[in-house]
Image 1 (cartoon, rainbow, N blue to C red):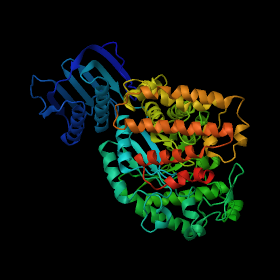
Image 2 (image 1 turned 180 degrees about the vertical axis):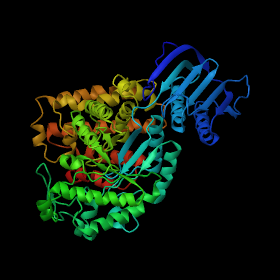
Image 3 (image 1 turned 60 degrees about the horizontal axis):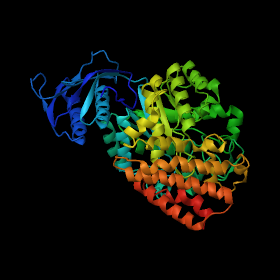
Image 4 (image 1 turned 60 degrees about the vertical axis):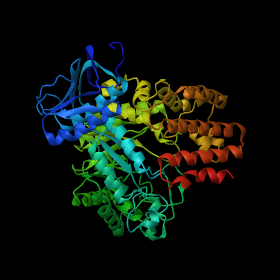
Length: 601
């Protein structure tokens, strides 16, 4: 037992091994000491963990009552000397003792116990774990607008996983996928979340110490609204615009900030959306307003400056959030283009400093927000989108850079983002490596640098007794590097499946790159058949990674031959549909497959 490695996600701050072990019995006593209204729901969580491991005879007893049976003792003590959200977990041959200063810390102690039970199902190694987080807020933002809207079951399962990994914040990125009462034409084909869905999920999150925060983009990224006749009068560029990289886009994306009706629409949306959440935070988005100044606001922007026009509309949105009792968050990319204006931002705003490459300048950008005294979070990404299988090396470097810069300059939170650009073709488990990495860096940045990520995924994500699935996921996520081409925000392997015209991308590939990558794909996926996953969705996870491999292989073959096997195409689309519907609502699937169907008969 002393030689066995203890694998915990996130890695704890301090773990001291002791002699002996605590033999779990079919029955025992759970004692509590502290605030009953806080501890009683947590005892229920403890009962669930024990029952899941087969120990259903444990009963609660009054504190101090002597008993010869094995004991688990929960002590809530505000003066125990452990920082907020922290805990001390002591395992001896006589029992288990969990000590925390607050409800969050006790919950995280129980999540650590749950992970220990998964690894040591009959006898827990004697040890003392003392633990607390680097970041007060550790969150996930999941894109539900391009194009996947997960089922409520999928979201609840994800929340349960994230809470065990000690996340305490969740946002669902929304453009058009909330069922606004008076705007059916915007969402009718999207299978949106309803107000009832949100309220039910909010309760589920609160029970697990997760703050579900409303997220509605409120300036840019509103194409789904503005392309419709009813809303075109609100568009900055109703006939389209030129993106910063030179591409002509045919549809509008941003609201016209000079039109008072733009704010009227937002007021209506906020009045309907925000009351469904218990959180007092609100992410209003406002990123990538690429067309600002190209259309209806052009004269105003020329006279007053594009940055000033952006800032004034941002502050109007902020005022609406404040009137409704919310603290507004906003993506910081646009204001960082106008650093002279950062100091004018009210200190009750929270800037979300995002960037998705391993060399993103988090150091410089976090220093800008810190110097202005503005609260901010760092927001790296899972690198799953535009990739099929992820971009493992980039993800690791990106999250580490964000976490370290944020700690240095005083970020209040770390929010890892998981986007769905261009069809949201990556299955959810592709993002587990990114979630796990962010969980580790958000909790214990120093230890996360050396953590055995593949082993942790095997134990706490895939529950693979063969110990192969974690490494398969990481290796598949690094397959893009075999091509010799590394691009920003995308894998060239994604382009080989996604792009109509492959010539520009084939020109970038070194000789024999396709052959080498195909061979490496076979080697990386060969261990899949040996996986022995015990999680409840094990079969589905296997199918999802098999689908990813199939999509990559099809793209490589298409690039290598210039042709496509239509029978394979139709089978691939059918499997994509089946796997999609296992976790997600139907809405959005047609949009996700449209690019493929338009190219393939």
